[in-house]
Length: 251
Image (cartoon, rainbow, N blue to C red; front, side, top):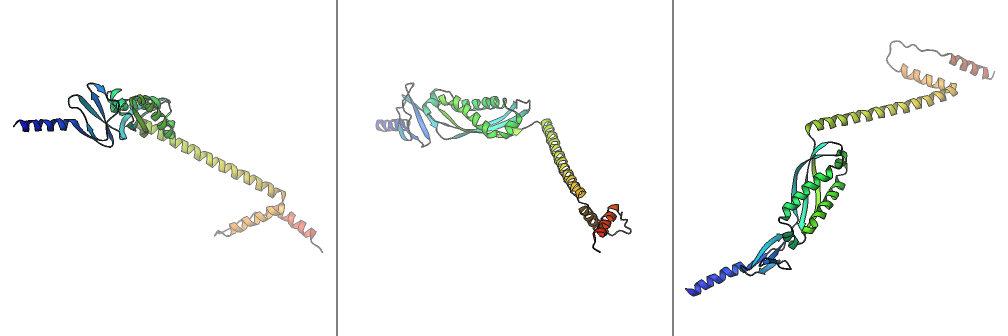
C-alpha cells in the first residue's frame, strides 16, 4: 500500500513537472516570483512543481478586429470606420512582464490611434490615400507597443460608412460634378466646331470657285431627298463666274 501511494504521488509530481510547448509557443517560467532569463520551448519542458509557474505565450500572427469608430474628419464629415490589425509577440518575456494583457492593450491602442489619425485628414484623403494612412497608423501603433515586446505587422482600413443624410449630400455633389463636366465638354465641342466653321468660311471666301462647288454639293444632297417641291436659290455669283468663264473662253 505505501508503495502504491508513493507511485501515485510520483506520477502526480511528474505530471506537474512536465510540460509540452508547441512550436508556435514559448513558456515564461516564474521561479519563486522571479522570471527566468530565457523562455522555454518548444518541445518537452521540465519545471519544479510548486516552486515554478509557467505562462504560455502564443507567437503566431493574430488578428484584431477594430469595431466601427465614429470619426469627425478635418472637413467636418462624420464617418464610421472599422479596421483590422495584425500583430504578433516578438519578445515573450516583455509581453508578460511589461504589460498586464498585451492583446487588450494593443486593441485599445489601435482604436485610439485610428481615431487620432483620421481626425486630422479630410474625407477625400481617407478614400484616396488609404494605403498611406494604413502605413502611418501601423507605424504609430508599432512604436507604442514595441516596448511591450509586440510587433504590429499591418493594419487595414476596411469600410468607411457615411450617415444617410451625408450619403444624399455626397450623391448630389457627385451628380452636380458630372453635370458640370458634361457642360464643359459640350461647350468645348461647340467651340471647336465654331472654330472649324470659321476657318472653312475664310477658305471659301478667298476662293469663289470653291464656294460654288460647295453650293452645288449641298444642292445634290438636298435633291436626293423625297420632296414634292424644291426651291433652289440662284446666287448672283454664278452669273459672275459664268461670265468670267465665257470671257476667258477662246474664240
